[in-house]
Length: 458
Image (cartoon, rainbow, N blue to C red; front, side, top):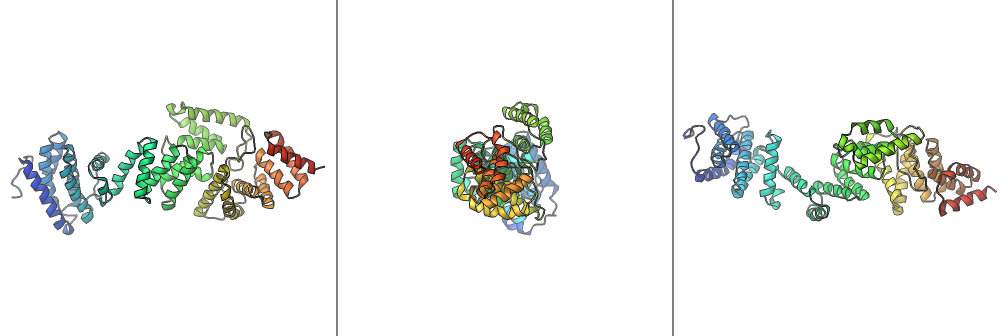
């Protein structure tokens, strides 16, 4: 009976195909637990499979179904071949718009995966795999997707791509619903971080990305989102560049270029700019960064990228954008990375004026600043927090260190002068004021403290 049909000869009825599918359903469960992955498939069934694939390729889907269902029956003892056969059978049924039998084949494939890794052991080409996943998204009800052992992740990726393509408002509504149903899903949490970034909510994007990274620190897409959001704020510490290195081109090019300019890494910025495709170089964002690069390279003093912060074009009393040095020689890679994250979080709190967070950030930063005595970034952010909390002695200590490391921004020096005045070092406060006052925009705050410091000198 096994050789009643010759290779290439079509069975003649859909009824035989339906009976064959039922046979696969009954036999798969009973036999797969005892199969040997090394068992050879009878050449007859292999030829049926190859003929079925050829029928499908030339558009004879009815014939392909009948050949493939017989071929799959003969491959029960070889999980990888059975998996490939079921995949092609499912694709043909999708082409026939036969959802009922498609779902039946998917059930068989899931069962074969559960018992013998029939899906995960496959080496399908990407196009075939993508076609099956797309068909599953169309035909498998949502409430069943998560229950398909071995398939939930790839199918969820297909659904994520569909959600990612929605307009922002609709995407937010969909993600609200999905996160309510599965609040721990890293897929939906990552899409939420991307949504916040695209909406221009950089602070929220950083928080959402870091929520993903707490669960999976090596999540490249989340690190990319965090890097892009921090770059948009010009908070360009060392870890930000590491994050941006994980972004695919061309997504990461503009954020990387911005951070290289902020960090005064002129050579790498110019190299990156020259490497961009012509169309991207002509975009308004890149042209603006090109102009900024040329202007700042002409006017800014030369200084090592790790030892200076960018001077704003119109100096004021605003919180500066962060830069950093890696002076944490006493810590390993993981603690150094954690310190960088805390520094970035402190800059974020300062820039956003979240004063209720200052005490916690300051307490976390003091030991980091004491370890990173050669890090201008660590010393400066700690000084600014101490200044905001009116811890004047500490502020003077950290401002002094930052100045020795090359921090000479006018607005930073003005705060340093105020802190010196508060601890009674009036002469030094006046000296620092002489250096910075001509470069600062007049404001009530600046006028008030300038007058007090001048008067203290007699």
